[in-house]
Length: 369
Ligand SMILES: *Cc1c(COP(=O)(O)O)cnc(C)c1O
Image (cartoon, rainbow, N blue to C red; front, side):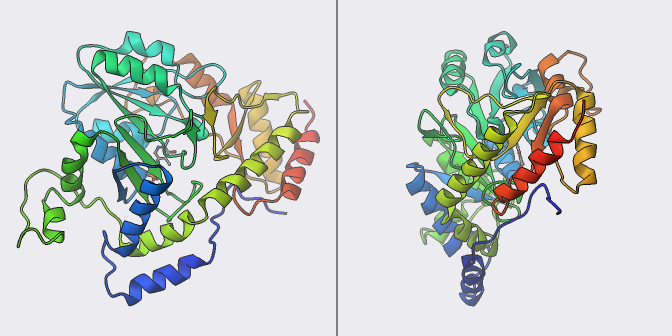
């Protein structure tokens, strides 16, 4: 049996809502379903401001614009991270300063942050890997003490929490992804959470290509003007219609993924050549990623190959951003390099069955060290 790494699940209402959007005769963005998605998050997360975007990448780019990042500014980001996290700030001219992971989780080591902050530091970006929360109290206390902004790359984090607060709603900005690799999807899609009221008005301008079209749409003025930089940051209402159908199943998705995650955890407990994930304190995750850390890179390579012969697909994850050809930093990120070499993600998607997990466990047991 083939076990892919990921597969998109549709719940059924997607077709109906897309048809409704088409029949309504208005499919450009910021329409009925876009508003439904905004309302969903405002209610579910108990927040005031969020904006649907074309991707999490786009939401991070909006955050970088809103923070007025410019050449000379430094932005601290995790070296065990995704290119979009880095690009959003590099595109505004920032110098990136990398913070290493912890030894026992891929999340950044909060204790290292203080020594990386300089007079030029404008923002700290955190990634909650796999929906496992970074210690946000520590990050916010430090950032507020130095007058530095915090952006949460919460791409993995829909319905995941730190001390009962949704991830992405704690820093000044949060960015969630609805890419098809994530728990809830619209193929491509994202959400910018604007958690600091002073950024709300400008966020709407940047979202609307740098214009005051939001006021025009409300009927307050006869035309709209170019008043700032901006871009075409929001998706069509067809995409929003698909997303809204998915969002209505959010609690079921999280519960089902957590069941599969726990099943992996209990079955993998017997295997000695890797370590199971450590869950951070105060973190309630969402079953986004099931990963393990191998004792060595060679064993990981052998296992990936062994699984492939059985048509089971497991993937490593990030490469150290600091060492990429594009950045070429020489400073060592020892824990990031360990995660780069030794982390492996197993198949985890809504239609995965526990029988399939049993087959994966069987394949692992066949492996002789
Ligand atoms: C998936 C992901 C992104 C990018 O999300 P898109 O919606 O595809 O732009 C950014 N950061 C992290 C940590 C991700 O996993």
